[in-house]
Image (cartoon, rainbow, N blue to C red; front, side, top):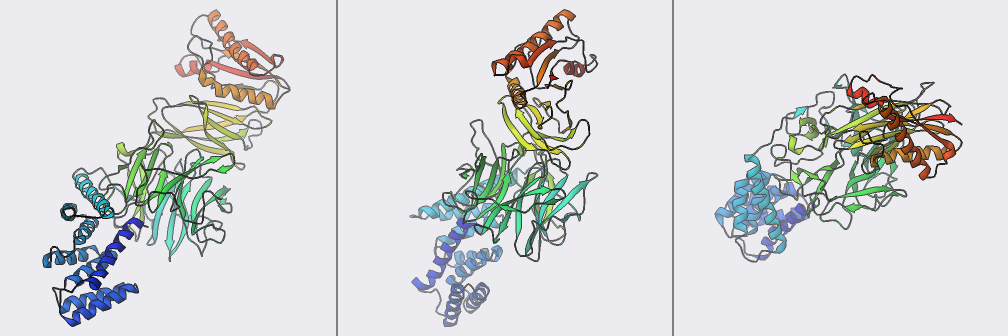
Length: 634
């Protein structure tokens, strides 16, 4: 996975092999030279254990055999046996300090993997004193120096971190990793690896606790292929995941999508080009509105080995993938993307940005200019000299999920959760969870659900409630006002408003939307029609609701409606009567201006005469200040 690191390592390794080909050995011991030659032959054939054995024999014959120590250090480092590799490099420096300057770069890198950052800094500084260093090696040395300097500072300023094992209902002696939860945290889906086969499992939250995990679905999991690296939509209805080497795939690994069908899942569909290619596409993360897919690929046009890309949904399907750019991707590897439900906080792992060694976790935020800002390392001890990846968050953003194999769990990789430090959290997000039913029969309805940012008049959520339960779930971010509209042919639409300006709670909204048939006398409260206090000029935030009403009237061209205005009891009866009538007239005139025949419309003000709540609280008064429409003819 670490292409840049591997290429550097192989370069150094080839240099080590060349030592035996281009210079006189530091030993005259024929047996030592014989074992050294045998080791080189084993390396050519990728028999690394045999090479290690032969190099140790060569050193046993002559403990001052510098080339053998250097070669053994390279092989041990390649096998991630860092501590003994460092011992071999130190022996080379002891025997011959200027034997080969690359030794200092190698030991510096290896010390970072061992979390010995001051030592690493010392050796890298020594390496940089040599003249005529190639541009490639100089860039790598500067990268390692940045890692060492950052790590020293990070350890001196640790962040709060108290990981909690998610327990035996989730974790087993097998490997569990890559957990993702729905927005309401009712379901957790993760990958479990059994006998080298990766499958999905799910756990449902019952009475605030995660229940025993069960096999996700035979329609998604397979016995012969691996499934993993998944992303669940906020409502839990769509699963994006990685499938490798499947017969219907386009490359080695492809991204698939499956839709929830009742208690099971539908047949996975391979995402078509331009997302999936003959290359390697994996690790999807879907945005809260379902319209942007982030993923990892090694396709051409990137900055390094594995880059993070994104594709936006258009009327014609997924658009051409766009590289996330140099504020996310580096000349090394970036992976494990996770876009939070606020759609403006992005988590990922990288071994290119300054970190504590191997891959670290980072967060990037969307700037006011619409561009992703340079990432921030999540800090120590969240990040270590090990490999950190696969971080996901709850919708509220205060807790994170991750997997680790070094926290004394149940065996292998276990799934943990921890409270994310406040400065690393996304914007406050909550969710709207609702059910749509027929107002008369109470039967669930499949209806179009749309949530609109009232300032921009753009939708942030568009989907349908489910056929079997009529349910839906959507996340919304603090700091904005939203309008909800639910519509279905043959019914009046449903309107609701959510004000999240100054919102600091973590409390969801629960909606029970009862859709009334289009019948004379049935009415709708237009909760997203806005006026200033004691004024009757329509505010710009009213546009989305007015357009919805226009659409409804165009779809149902034979109906006539009465538009009515209502007030609370503050002020005189006459003032309120006049104000309510003027407000109703403003809506009436807007409709006519936008193509609705005046013959289909009447308007009337009712002042304070028809309250729907007691006028004794601010909330009750707000409910009474309203605009409605009623069917008066079909």
